[in-house]
Length: 365
Image (cartoon, rainbow, N blue to C red):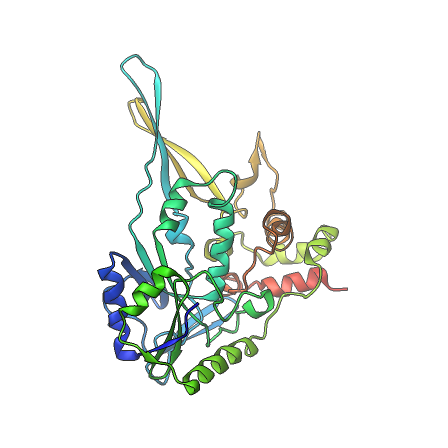
């Protein structure tokens, strides 16, 4: 990590130009359909300006805010997941040759260099879990690996957590400590910029920066700490893995199943969930077929369908599977909880089910 440099707000376009000049497609937060989403961008003018987000269980609103900050909001429904773990992609094709033999042809992953601006600490933590599953395990996924290797990440330390955020309790934010190429602390008149990689240092040297003052550093640190202190939600600070698996028959599972719609919104917006299904799409003449992987969810009936029946036929079993796996089982698989405290599952649940409240109810004495 380098010493922070000060980039005036007017210099933000220079960052986008430097990334574009280095061959990256620049992706950043933009407002679309009343939410902040990641989309390709070419100008700093396309970033949100003077906006806050108001989030609550089952509620998300963008609101006007004083000042011209671009990152005075917590997060939108997307994280990095859709940019790496594609919602739908071809894995291979199979066709018959002239002798009628089946010939399999794996898909050749192609990834354009991509720079993502505005990544939050919780999403970097989620990315490490996705890496552990798709890249660093015994069977690395070539498509994910290609996209991951082509990624340049510009983090922004979070200073405006939503009411649904609890990354401080999971130890994943609001400061981005590692895993980025550049990290920004937003101030009223500009940004403190730190490099976290060799590639980041190269881009940083191309920017019109000045020495950061001690006052600017103290202001940035104070705002990040205030962001942590402002968070009101937290996961129970107990041995969740043991308690959850000891309480598989807790009456709370029945109670939450009465509210849960099994719509899978929580798993779609979760930055760590990676359930998927695979399907074949044959050509009408039967001569060729393409094999696809697409996002799935443990909340669907088909996801646990095995040999004539679903292992988890009801919402009670599906919600229990999701919570116990994410907060318990992941410790054995990846050495930590699968929750990074982004709060998206709370905000985007249409009936406002709160994972911290449900875990607290099941694990209460």
